Structures are given as structure tokens and as C-alpha cells.
Image 1: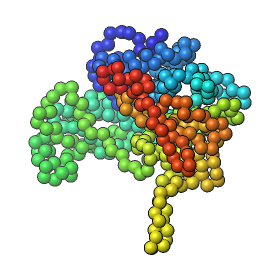
Image 2: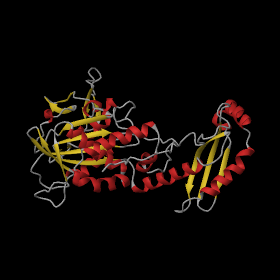
Image 3: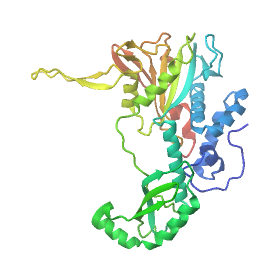
Image 4: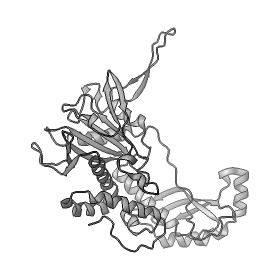
Length: 384
């Protein structure tokens, strides 16, 4: 059994905004699509035979979370561990994702994604993605289309035919040369706006004139700019929330417990986010003495490992945080961090990856192998 079966593929079109990722890669005839199928099929070959049928069904429906589970399975297998799926526990009817054995270690692994979106926000994003796909059906030879304002007035799906018909009737009324001159003189204030409204949708579009060499070209998607989203803060809160949901899921455990999180925050995920989430927010303290400010960096008492009440979630032995993006797995960042107050310590020095731990009251990181090296990804010509 393969995740992606061998067949003739002829679709060279880019993915739609609303596309199911599995369906897109299963039909895509692109070079990158071929590499992705090859890599994922090779990982799937190593997955437990008795779990493959169920996993493939889930992979087709829940591509992102299943992909991360497959990645974690491959990553720890390549480090010399044998993983058993959904092992039974003594003190719980629930089952973690894996039991890992090897290098004189046995430990449980739980896998989860962390996002900043609520269910309602994800539903809204899906509806907006559907609008982008509708707009991309429009024949707009002279203008890029950018959504300036959007309001879904009902839960009904807007009519693609109605939107496209309206736009294709209205767009010829606007002169791209005049719009370009206004853009040069007045900036974005000079860009024409186009209003669409029916019983389900109210939308305002900015018409951004295309440059001369692009105008009239076929197979160029008219949605040239997506909406930008402002925010404050990073991914630390979503990471902490995801960890907390898994930290107490299984009662008392007889072995060390590792939680792996794929941090998919739209804010991005970097070292500051991870360290702030685990050890506490970065803070600067200083003396009120004007002659000796004594400024120093400290950790706030609001981390996953410890807060103002003391050590927390000590049933967790270590955590792994990834920023896994399909197509850029080679360069993917990760953090493998030991819980400094764990009830059952996991010897992280027996792993081949980067390891972070507390020693002499300092956060220490020892370098290990990169993802590309562990998973032998350099053998693929294209980036993955």
C-alpha cells in the first residue's frame, strides 16, 4: 500500500486556496509534487503495516496533523528507536500515539498541532479561501484584484457565477493606464474600488493596475495580493495551550513522556516563542538606584515548566516543538527540550538531534544533526 498510488498525472495547475492538500498532491504533475509524493511514500513504507489502512484514510482527511505524525515517526525511527502505535496504558483507557523503545530507553510520545485559530476562525478562513478561488476564475486582463473589505451576510456559500459575471461586466469600465497614473500620483488612495453586494456577500475590491508586460496574459491568477493581518505577540501562548491539553491526558505514567508539537501559528514560531512558552516570558529587571541600574534579563513566572506556584506538568519529561512546512522540511526548525522538574527524566543525550536542558541555572543547548541529515533529504534534487 502507498500513500500516493502510481498513476498518470496531467494537472499542471497550481493549488486552489480551498484545495484539500492530499487531493492536490495526488493530482499534481509538477516536479515538486512528484518529490513530495516520493518522500512521503518512503516514510509511509516504514509505518506499521497493521496501521497503514487507517492512517491513509486519516491522511486524506486530516493532511496536516497526519503529516506531522508521520514525520515524527520517521524522525525517531531514523534515530534508532522502534515505535509501537497506540500502546495500552496501565492507568488509562486512552492511548498515546506511540511507545518508543531503543538505546536502553522506553518512553511515550504524543503528537499534536498548535494553532492560533478557533473553530469559528478556521471556518471563516475557509469561506474566505473560497472567495479567493471564485475571484481567480475571473477574466481580469488589466487588473490585480485585492479584497479590501469582506462581509459574509449569511452562512450560505456565495454564488461564483454571480460574482464572476458581475466582475467581468464591470472591469472593462476601468482604464488601467488612468489607474496606473493615479497610483503614481496619489499612491493607493488613487486605486479604484469595486463594490459587490447580494443577499449573501458584501465585498469591496481594490483594482490594482497590472504592468504592461503582464496585461492580457492568460493563465495569470487575478488575485495578486492577499489580505494582510496585523497582530501583537508571538506563538508562545498557542504552544503552551497545546502542551497543557496533552500534559494530563493519561494519568500516572510508568515511563517518560514526550510531547511533540507542530507550531502552526500564523504569527510564526522562533526561538523566542519557544523559550518564552517553556521557561517563561523574557523580562528585563533593573534597580531603581540611578547610579547602578543593574539591568539583566530574567524569565517571568508564567512558563509551561514553572509558574508562580512552582513546577508544573511534571509528568511530562520533554517536549519537541517543530515548525514543519511541507516543501521546506529540509530547513525546518525544531527544539527538543528537557523538562527540568520531570518526575521521570528522559535522557536526551541519547538522541541525535539538538538538545536543550537546564544546567547550573542556565539554559544550555547542545547541537545535534539537522533534519535534512537525519532524514537523508539531500538526496532529493528539489527542496523539501
